[in-house]
Length: 405
View 1 (cartoon, rainbow, N blue to C red):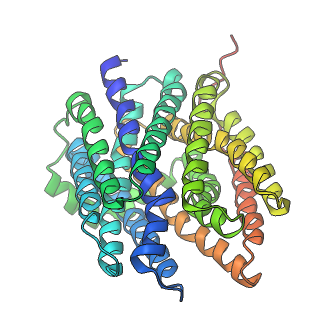
View 2: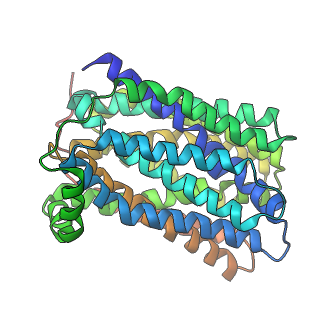
């Protein structure tokens, strides 16, 4: 294991985590809906949901194909660099948006979000390449833990510039750019593929059925992706809707919401670090089982609680599971992938994550609408997703025997 490569890989998690913290969760959604659109008729909520869904659809439908092209054409790092640049350009241009530029704002967000999510596909694909099987849980957890530190720093910076909000978007772009440089310098260079990138693209477009068949033939990987589809749907929906819930159900202000997310980032950081080594020792499946039970308990509790201070504490507890569920999922996925198929298989990992992320907000919103605007029934819908994911996870065999020492 090359420590310089691993360090550069982990630092990219630190670099890119400022984006979801500020742009998709705690700051930009509220600014976009409340200030840029500022329409009491709900136009802002509609456009924000549309932007999330469109960007998720683009990533979900393109990631498996592009992953297969990258593997066969030897272009993983090129794709990762191109999509990172796309994200940075989109975020930087958001700083030019003014009040009333609703369409331009959401289009730039879609560009940035597609860039971010697609770059992560090729970034994740490096994990099984640069880390031995018995260290993947530890390194994956380290990446997410350091990533949550990056998220927390991003939110702290955002708090300093809430009165000149356009500066925040430039800070996000600069932070992401500077700390991503080591990854592009030290991660393994692209090797010559079995065909050119152009030939790989032609092959992928005409043989997508073969690509799907390669995944379907791997029983444990296939079963894991089915489980992942459901439980990550619940996770991503909570991340996307948490700010709206904090403000709508528990009356948090914008500054209070940022502080809440800041504290949750540290809780997630602690969870990612605390369960990183146990994921290697006991196997990621056991960690996922425990964390999903934690989230099921939290979801049921959220339905009943009324006091905002209790909600605050519950969010911190749930945050502990947030870091570990993501890091253990990535490590588990990496352990199920055959050599030479890393980008392709992580493309399907993104397909499940992004396609499910279109379903969860719709289910949550429908439950709230049927309840006359009460968001609490949505908590039970998300809890059901965790239950289904947990049940399906039992069908997956952990390929690594737990270390008993």
